[in-house]
Image (cartoon, rainbow, N blue to C red):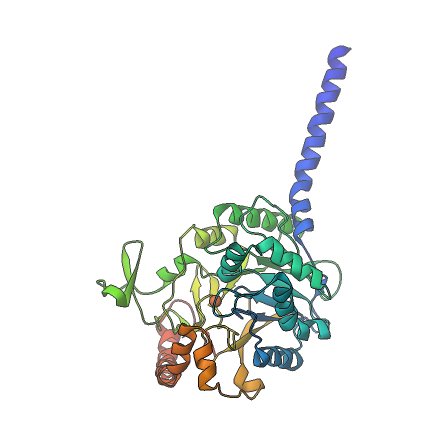
Length: 411
Ligand SMILES: [Fe+2]
């Protein structure tokens, strides 16, 4: 009799454990998921990605005017701030927490006024400023939440993970309750995601798949810093060129952009930080059709690795950091419910939407040195851009014929 009761108890405990285990991935996904996003009746969903605003205490009136104009022109369903949103450690440190919050409200106002949901990814400058000032990632997220409005922002569902803002957001089909697409957001702090973050993401992926009748849910990943392995998508040089090249895994890569393997414009050296096997993990996970990042402000390109599109979008900063006249702005992604992986992307530059007043010499002087240099170099940069764009146009048909992946026109 005693044995039977003991077995009953053991069976009950085992069943409870199994039940809890089966709920764990669901719980993780449910806790991580925020927002109530859905494809339109026409089966379309639009994301406006804005990166590297470097908003300090110095207001950026044209940037905010630009964000408002971009929202009105393109009516996105979601805005993603892809890191280096705040930067208080250059020439204009925040004097207080209140001033920092005021700066946040400043660039969020166009979204709050229009009731546009958004997600915040943090970048190396958000993190380093936080570390130096005491307003760390937690404090910054607390401020974002305090600002309120239509805020789709969540805390890290697994506090032990690297960073604060790791989360995923699902987008429902235009009709019914099916999940048509999923977005991951990884907080890389000042580097690439750690293996534990990739494992967490893989768990979410499995859970979504299990709740989608065993079919993979097409997903996109936003993070701030370029995955380090993307540098290996470039053609290596036969030998090192010293400071004109960079080394990675015992190979040398050129300083100038690789126009054959990168569609678009790699206007500054392409490369991430330490390789943590992210690209390999993404391949193994199998649901991510594109990874979007900023960090390299001038670059606007796409390269394909293992059928995943790796996309560097240009900076939106007006005065807070360097950028370029041609592409400075935001990036619009348009997805179709039938096949989200077959999306379109479009650069939405300042110059198309607003008239920008040129900076005065005093303004050049007042902002950070690299920004000054970049601005002053812009006439030369412009010539270089024209040459690179011309080269891409010439290469395009050759890529179409000779390259394994069909080229995508980025512009
Ligand atoms: Fe940046």
